[in-house]
Image (cartoon, rainbow, N blue to C red):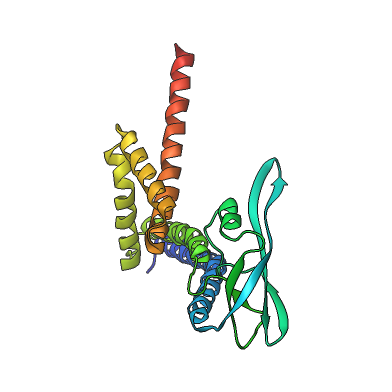
Length: 252
């Protein structure tokens, strides 16, 4: 015969499982957004590869200047580039420099493509209105944005699921064990260098330098993650130390 305490334990575990499933379903729905961004990025990557086979015609830069926009006191700059080209007697215009965007600065883009410059334009033979100035080149901006959203989302969801499993004394699956070990590994440099935070700050600076040099897209993505993760943790630790310092001054 089941005792009331055992029945309450079973009900609590059922409620915990239902809560975990509901939580994971919510995180899964939110994860559809970055997954859609990745799919769109893959489509652009396919287009960039296809553009290497597109026919080439001469074109001319008809607009090139740095556009300034301000929002909430923050000023941003972007390059406004447009070029014209002719296919079978019909003039077309496009503003695509690199499919998927590019990492050039606004001034750098305008310097690269000044007004009146003669350029080679690769156009899609199926849709002559679709063209690009730098065929075969691709910028992994969509993948970086999706990764910066998806990785923390999956990490938080898995950690919350792990905590709920441990609270209900359930067996932890392999994925959650792997995530737990990975998190301990990621936080290890901060715990190991807790008295030497300048070491972590130096690593973040090195990652920023590698990111700015843009040696390889994969390296850039990993450096972006490293800077985002360790830079955030480092800023939190420095802020906490500053607060402790202010408290010590107040007590004195």
